[in-house]
Image 1: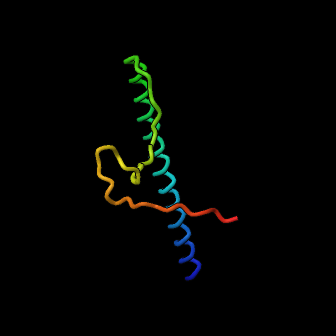
Image 2 (image 1 turned 120 degrees about the horizontal axis):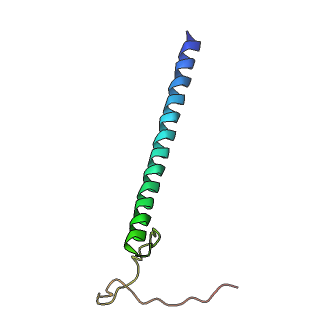
Image 3 (image 1 turned 90 degrees about the horizontal axis):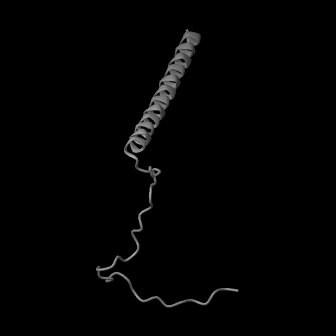
Length: 81
């Protein structure tokens, strides 16, 4: 009886892994298709394509026109030798 249970557990884990791998391949194929359609449309319309870029947010920089109320004066420290 325990051998049947371990067989079914292994079979379930194998099926779960195959489903996961299939979902990853579908997601990659979908991204590739979107990228291809985007590049084809840019070539058709004569525009240049820009790469997909994720730019980091700069949340700690004071933007022009905003008050710097939260910024306090800082005294410099001498570096340790």
